[in-house]
Length: 310
Image 1 (spheres, helix red, strand yellow):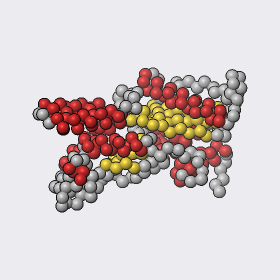
Image 2: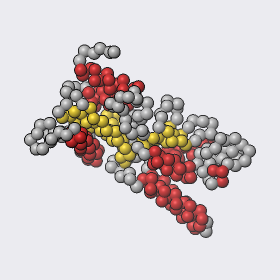
Image 3: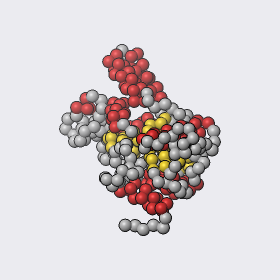
Image 4: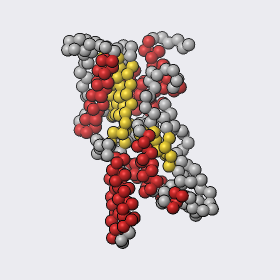
């Protein structure tokens, strides 16, 4: 048992401990979604793998993906376009994937670190520079193959282009600068706190984390503490920038997390922040409805106070 001086301090401590230890029988603050990431291993023969666990092992992680299927399909596409090692790497004879063009070939030849690094650079470009740039490269490959009468090769590359479209079709670009950032907002009413964190990667919303906390009467510092606890979890990647509403202490978060924290005033970033707020409101309404609160007009238990994004 840990004694604290106030209910607020107890709540903040509980948030931190649950985020850190993830107790199996306490669902408060635990993610309902297990996010998937694509990882480039730092082995002698680097590989692409899909994982739900982030380790501080010096490797590159890309995500999060709320669907493991999407992560697997993206990895499969990258293995075709920019293959890394797809086998044990033991030399002797080419592996099955080498014949399919999905393995760089340490099983058949000596692959230099320079060659690996060049391929890894292309993969990182895929994640950071946008899928449209990769599409243009593939279209050039397809057209070149067709001009040289390599029609089977042209058809294969066309299938890659179609696979790329399937992977990205649900990802609408909402911020044109295509930076990786998370967008955070909340709504608090009748002692219930609804917090939402949207994950924006390469300018597109790829997922979110939604949380409902009850019995939150005193709000001072609670949201900031929740955000800090969220990113202390080993499987939550901290992006280079956070966008938050004016009610959240941006300066405090920036100092604690060591990243840029901004409150947008206008434009597409503000629009995304408003979208996050709307989702937080919607989640809170759904929570009240689930608890059989009557929230007809004029009923204070279900009447959400309007919270403007400043």
